[in-house]
Image (cartoon, rainbow, N blue to C red; front, side, top):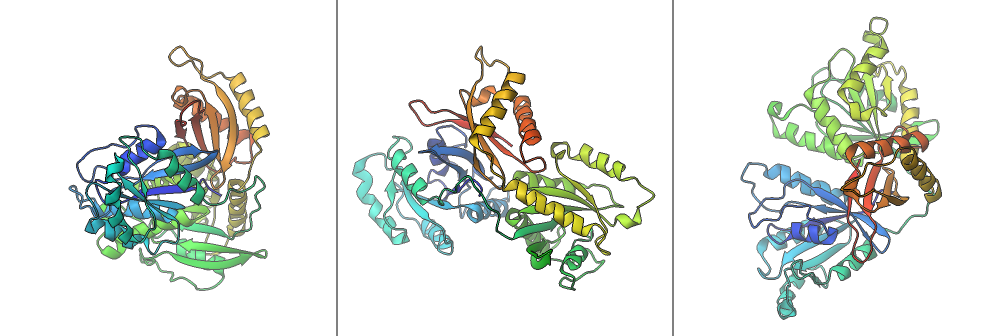
Amino acid sequence: MPVPQVAIVGRPNVGKSSLFNWLARRRLAVVDDVEGVTRDRQTTLVEHNERFFELIDTGGMGVEDVDNLTEDVRNQIEAALDSADVILLVVDIRAGLMPLDTMVAERLRTIQRPVILVVNKADHPNLDNSATDFHRLGRGLPILVSTRESRNREDLLELIVDRLPARHEDEHVVTAQMKVAIVGRRNVGKSTFVNTLAQAERMIVSEVPGTTRDSVDVRFELDGQTFIAIDTPGLRKRTSQKTDIEYYGMHRAQRSIRRADVVLMFFDAAETISRVDKQLMSYVIENHKPCIFVINKWDLLMGTVPTERWVKYLRNEFPTLAYAPIAFITGQTGKNVKTLLNHSTMLFKQTNERVSTGVLNRLIDAATKAHNPPSHQNRRPKIYYATQVATQPPTIVLMCNEPKAFGADYRRYLLGVLRDHLPFSEVPIKLHLHRRSQTSSPDGDSED
């Protein structure tokens, strides 16, 4: 199970980014009185009472972006809502109940997850009576907070932790059906591949680019196991998108990636890697999805081009994904398709693996002794202990004295050690370095 996620939402200028920084005890998000400063989602790891969760800051709902990025901001908010286990609906006690607050509350009514109503900017108890109007939003008793006066922070954290999904034991049994997203640019053979999996004409197959305009789930069985293949629309760069159907198809494809357990990134054996391919892979990486590079239509080149040439090409184009497997298939005939699905199952199992704290600590201890982290500001960085806090993806927290002291090179070294010695050799690992709390809440940083 992944680290639980907590999304902060609300209309512009209610103090969402200030709340994000306040709960994280770090100045991460830009805070400004101008509407629309926050556009992309921003996340950070927060710990309270030995529970970890990822806090997500979002843009203002209902804002019209001055740079014509309104739709992009809205999609980022929707992505945060899709993945959230708990939602913080933030309002401003000084401004009072606004029509946009009601609009946001209406949007959340269809979401079957806990929503906490957070009345912000309640800098003094004298303002508390002004919160009664917010009861109309139908979210029960609100919690009044002030980021400026640091009021009720612990109470809010308690509410959040209380509403997180139940903590899972270390023993994790994979019982869920594996969802595989088949992605790639247009006309690389994705729908033909899905038809081969389903052994039926479940999808429209055509040489006309862009036949699949929406994401479609197809169930199929292999060796007694049931799987779900998510066929996605072919993607192309935004300047080539001519219709709303194409535009929204791209976002549906991105949502399919977020839903998937494993992503199969398709390439046409006879085509070069494009800018769209790289943009798509960036989204896969951003969402920490296990991925297999799939070279389709290999029958057209088999015997004339060695597989090693494509392997080297992919490794050069995607150097941060050196751990990702590569498969050569012919989707139309089914050649190597079963092997590809078996490998996908292996990745699914890897991303659900759990490693004991003892094993992790012995490995990290050996790694730091073999290669000491460089000194930082005349201080030796130190890791106190390591623990795995989640699966899908495997998420490991290193409690240390100063997260910023561990540079990017050393973090990559630690990730390499983890991947080499743990059952995560072919899947992304989330590695968080977190400051061990002394008298205040912890501070942290992460590297994936």
